[in-house]
Image (cartoon, rainbow over all chains, first blue to last red):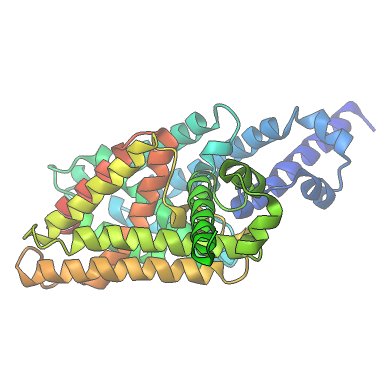
Length: 201
Length: 201
C-alpha cells in the first residue's frame, strides 16, 4: 500500500469515527455517548482511536467542529440562496430542511449544540465558550439575512436585527428539544410560524 | 419517641432527599445526578433510601412532582395576582421572579423540566409523557392569563392564545438553557422583551 493509500484509509477512519460520534451525541449528548460503542460500530480498536484523538475531550471538539461546519453550510445554502428573492422565504427554506433532517431520524436526533449546552455544567473546560461562540456565528448569519429583509422592505427598518436573530436561536433550540421530546414537528412548525407571522410583521 | 415523631422524622428525611435531589437534577439533569452524593449530603445510608423510594426512577418521579408543584404555585401566584390589574404585567412579574431564582444560584440551576426533556432518549419509560404533560399544564395557565389580556383589551382578539402560550414555553426553556450556558440573564431578558413587545402587540 502506498503512503497515500495509508493516509486515505486513515482519513476515512477518522471521518467514520466523527460521523458515528456525531450520530450518538446528537441523540444522547456528550456525557452519555459511550466511546466503546462508537469504536465497535466503526470497527476500530481502542488503541487506534488514540492514534486519531488524544482523548474523548479532543474527539468531542472534532465532532463539534464538524457539526458546526455542516450546519453553517446548511445555513449559508438557504440564507444566501440567490434563487429565492425573499430573505424571509429563505429562513423558511432553512426550517423546511432542518425539519426534514429531524424527520429522517424519527425526531430522535436533535441539534448537537443544543444537546451539549444543556450539559454545560459537566462538559470539559472551554466547551461552554466554544458552544456560545458557534451560536453567535449562526446568529450573525441570520442577522445578515434579516438585514437583507429590511433592505428589500420585507421587514420594518425599526427592528433590531441582531436582537431578533438572537431571539430566533433561543427559541429554535427550545423548539428542536421539544420536537425531540414528542417525536413530532409541531413545536418547530409553531415556532417558525409565529416567528415569521408575529415577530417579523 | 412516639409514632408521630418517628413519622415526622421520616417525612423530614424524605423531604430533605427530594430537596437535595432537586438541587442536583436542576444542575446536572437526571442521568448524571449521583444517588450516593445525595445520600451523603443528607446523611442517609443507602439502605434507608430504599425505605422511602423503590428506585432512582421512583425518586425521580417524586422530584418531578415536587418541582411541578413548586413551579405551578409560582406561576399561579403571579399569573392570577389580583393586585396586578394588567395580565401582561403578571407575565412580566413571573419572569422577574424566575430570573431572580436563577441569579440566586449564579445561573447554575436551570428548569428541572427543561433539563430532563433534553435527556428524553435515556430517561425511564413514561418520563417523556410526564414531562410533556407538565409543560402542557403550565401552558394552560399562561393561556388563561393571555385570554384575560384579551378580555381587558391588552391583546388583540385575533390572537390564538393556546398557540401563543405554547410558543412561550418553547422559547422560555430555550432562554433558561442559554442563560445557564453563559451564566447571565441576557437571554431571558431578550426573550421576554421581544415576546411582550413583538408577539403580543
